[in-house]
Image 1: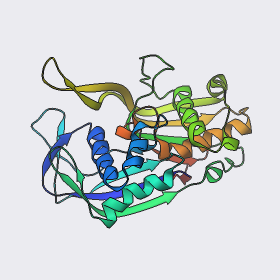
Image 2: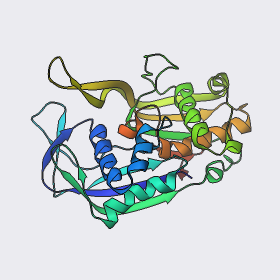
Image 3: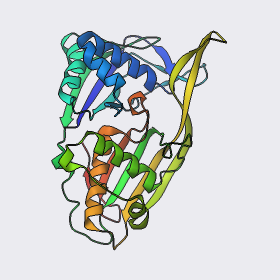
Image 4: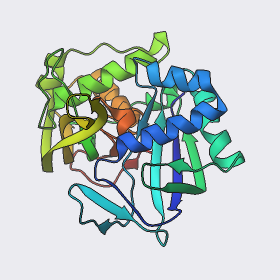
Length: 291
């Protein structure tokens, strides 16, 4: 079942890191996993389904004189959220927890290390995520999604990225992730046209970004070259038309709940597509916060 780990980290010393820190955090986490379980680290890295998702490093940063960089301080604490959706979630969970907590290993980034001070975890079964959306009233529930790191959603098999939190793009991405990891009897079938016909998106604010998801050695120039993707961050509310089928609404709500574990779009293991979700009334009132 999907799992979520929240790590509270403290830097060993002050150091700089890229604003797009996800690929360094992923490399550091994978190195820790290799020491505990090389086979599981290899499975996580090679898996085509995106076994884990990483959120952004949350905390107070100092400005850096180096372009596209920020600085961390040992006087501050930083939170990192790791989502696990792979069917081998238990083994992946152990390969992360064992070295970081039991063996007190640190996450080693390019310029410094991060020490784990606290750890919390939670799980949610697919049955729990599929809990019905509730009574229909004025179009059904409102889904409030905060895209915390750039969501990089490619349009089908092209090299074109979505630069707007369009309902079809966001929930088609989540549907693909859900069907790749859920039990066979819980797979869902939804038509993109139905998403477009019965859903409404209302962006409250959003920005577009180019984000570094990896680096490779440029053999011609003799130094690392960044690999970039495009995406968006911000906040968007999704509601349903009054005549939306209840089955569609229930399925979309399940995908929204799932998003906090899986991330949205591609490169989620490298810090892209992290999302915080609130589910409330159609008017956007108080409601369920996914945990």
